[in-house]
Length: 265
Image (cartoon, rainbow, N blue to C red; front, side, top):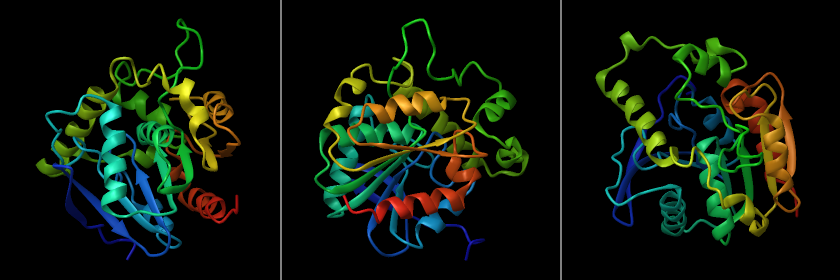
């Protein structure tokens, strides 16, 4: 089963079309992906999460195989889109888990409304500014060459290696569309909402902030500042992992998610 490709289904939420993978059984877990989608470069972490949860892993509108909605402007639109998705699926006591860019989206959701969520897990999220205006918190991924970007993102860069010459035109288009959408949503101001840090205190569900110890896109100190701004949040490092610990250490990632989700508040 682990070698089989996950099948994505089409859905429409509030007039916005997207695709998502749904797998597993048990309590619901909504996973919001980073810059390249929920299935890249590996979907093993989703299969591991599915051993304890019913995992719902959509593409953000505009990423991968989906079209960018004409009236979406920024991350605020994505936050409200996912609140509507949670209503459409009648989610109750769900785990909301977001990684990298998806972690930013998850935080924006949680400061607005956690009625359908019982836990929040942020994995190397973007989205806030913690230092002064002259100090960069988040690496400029558009100023890095492809090789340097991979080195900054992964403890083991070889994990992200792929032969683009062997990929289909559809897959290459999906990668390009994701990169374009990430730039569209996060370019100005660069990968953060200047007001989000101010409102993180509104998050009222138990929160776990997971961080790759070797992340060179956003440092563990940035993660500690993120956790400190959320009431009662826990901070935990995943060793031998960069910006995508769920890809580099999927077993450890899934174990920490499962353990946190079983905690009684």
